[in-house]
Image (tube, rainbow, N blue to C red; front, side, top):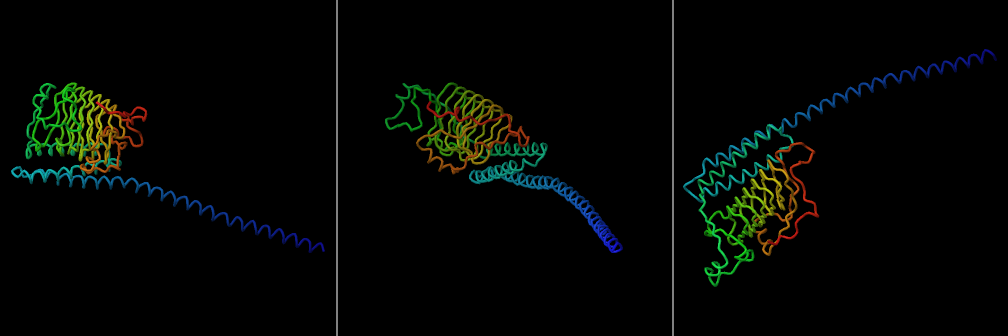
Length: 352
């Protein structure tokens, strides 16, 4: 009996030792497996990091090639613009304008991965293109000169024919309204060198023409209808309200003013302390600006719906909060140069 019991104890001890050996044999491969898995994951992370760094380089290379090719195509168009054939020149310049606008959009969409140097180089090239386009337009399609005439109430009553009925957008003659004189076929209209005036252009006088407002101080401007483009330069203390602009609005050196218009594209330079009530179907661009604030377009007049249709703008698409500041490239941080006008501070009454 004693011998049997000793044998059982020995068997139990041996079995326990066998299990311990088996357990130890299992743990060693697991440690090796985990170490190998960690090494593999580290290699994968490094590979992904390397690939992620190469993606912007590939995109920048694609941008550089595409931008250069499109810029060369526009330059070729401008170089071949037939100055002797006005109709052909107009068609060529329209094509060049469309291509330039597309190139601007391509640049805007590529800003997220371009370096600051690459961005500034592209901006300079685009600005040079736009200057060349303007110069070529003035050379091939010279604008007819127009003059300004201010009339008092007495002169208005004496000179106006019986059948002359004011348009809905006109203001009384004694309000200081000044209009552009010129034929309907003139390619540009607008106001210049005015101070403390109420200035109005009716829809039939604009008729898809370019509108230029320059060197105005403390003026109230009402532009009815649908201009082709709107240029606002060197104004101070003004209120400018405009109907739907079928292409672009260019603002330069505007101070302490209020602007309101729908458009396809807005470019604003050297502007300070100015409110913009905007409807824009692409993205607004500001450069060298500060104290600029935005709100949705809210001016209304009887023929606004018709003018929207005439302009071709999408009334359901308004990117008034999508503003690209060329002087602020910090990703994820709002630009300090522009703000949104709070609801309580937005203007709701636009009466003169």
